[in-house]
Image (tube, rainbow, N blue to C red; front, side, top):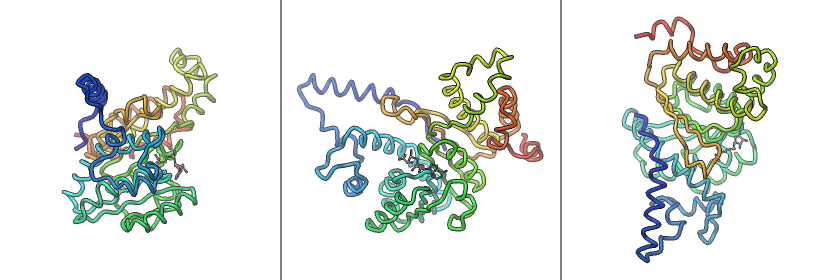
Length: 316
Ligand SMILES: C[S@@+](CC[C@H](N)C(=O)[O-])C[C@H]1O[C@@H](n2cnc3c(N)ncnc32)[C@H](O)[C@@H]1O
């Protein structure tokens, strides 16, 4: 089950209120580091990832990253539990892994605590030096069930090293169209859960920009006529199309904030669970949107929907 979302602002507000009343009562709140680190979280790992300094301090940037990832973990943990209950084994692929903060922290918080489950986490990353460093760190920490593949997301779809069936796909701020490739990967691997925090995607905005002259015949094009709006509207449309695409392939989709906007501008979190839901309507909506925006030709293959016969069979 996808977890209930939102509530972040309520919690932030509660935390602020608690902070204020602690001050009023003359009690100093605990040092910020203590709030940011989860119980049982390996300080050694956080130091190795340079999230914590050697003397246990967090700087502003690393606090933001840790907050993001720990918050994301709250969403992911129940999904991992669902998979574990169903399969006893978990295969997770993290795309655009970067320094693999997410993969390492998932491993530390979940895999180490659930030794009886057979877990495998793959980090997919194109930058050699990051892959080498992550491999080295995993070896030093004895994180044997963590692998790093020096591949693009698109190439990972056909990589022999990755099993045919994957339980969960994550992509945290994977650049540009890497998130779309991660969706394609999830669809091909029939992943039960997909967790995406998209980065800026420039492709849709570029197509809208290119076709602006033609589109301006319709008042709808006012939504993206000005350059800043082209970028923002392009980014919104991209995520809407991603959600419709997942729905068109049978997923239930939930969209929420990753953390508060004060912590990250790239803050949308898309979580999807495969439910074998009816697909015709979202598929039609997706294709209608592409047509209405005049981008069907260029973007139809990126935001592909299932073949017609599958849409028919899947109708209730
Ligand atoms: C902004 S970083 C995010 C890293 C990490 N997920 C995090 O949140 O800390 C995006 C990473 O995705 C990688 N990347 C970009 N496009 C990719 C692609 N097509 N396939 C694999 N990795 C990609 C980049 O090299 C970069 O390390």
